[in-house]
Length: 320
Image 1 (cartoon, rainbow, N blue to C red):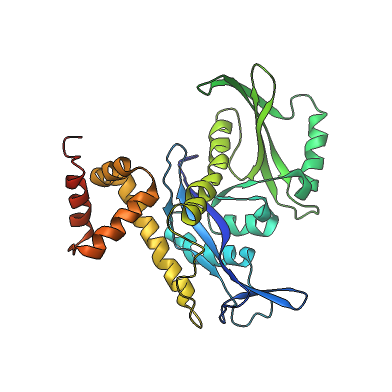
Image 2 (image 1 turned 120 degrees about the vertical axis):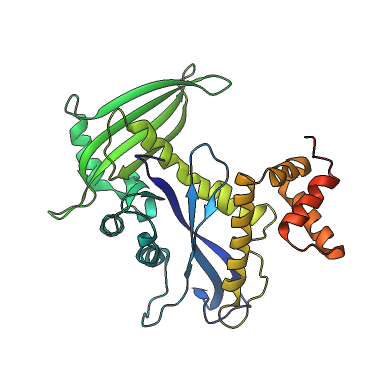
């Protein structure tokens, strides 16, 4: 959390690509005369610093929209997701995390209009106006806040150097939205080598007391890629596999079932001691899935609890 808010990461990804298999909901990309058909989805996940698991929220599929000639895109999907789901949360109780692609005025205004905070990756190449103003502030002594903290990472000391500034325009013009900016650079204390660097734009107040929490929250955005998308694609869920394409909505329906399974497993990993013990005993997630497939192929279980209890007992984990 930062400032008492939950962190919701948004990120788009592809879950189908083919030159042959396609449906009415596919995006079409032409390279010469060759067409590639694909499905994309905007994923939303609840993330938290120090917690490995992510909680999947309702996704927004990137599909052709009625009344629109242009192909759907991730930016339009974010707008739909916010319009549909922001009201689920109490006002100002959520901080949205996205990559640099969505750090621009229309999206920031959208978040503010729906009582959502934001911490968005903010790169110099795509935010020339903001960084020009920052360069002017750097010439004034004390205009930019700074703070350094020494940390031990288990092998060597690191120096975490923070900088921040308030009320910088995100774009040119008198109507340019003013945002706060902060930056974190991590150095190897002994060698001086830079280990990490990133910067963010936010509507949270930044200062010496809040800068560390804001930077931690900004870095948490990576969990949607590492603990979310990467796990779904490479650790047993086969996210990009064509389970069934259909003529219109089947691919997205089946992906919804897969996301529900991932959600259930994440909740079990956070709350069920027997599930935690079984997963730890079996090791890799793939081995766990192989065990599930084998057991449910030959035996009937009345519910999930009976299945996980059977695995727990047969692995002799009761005294563990």
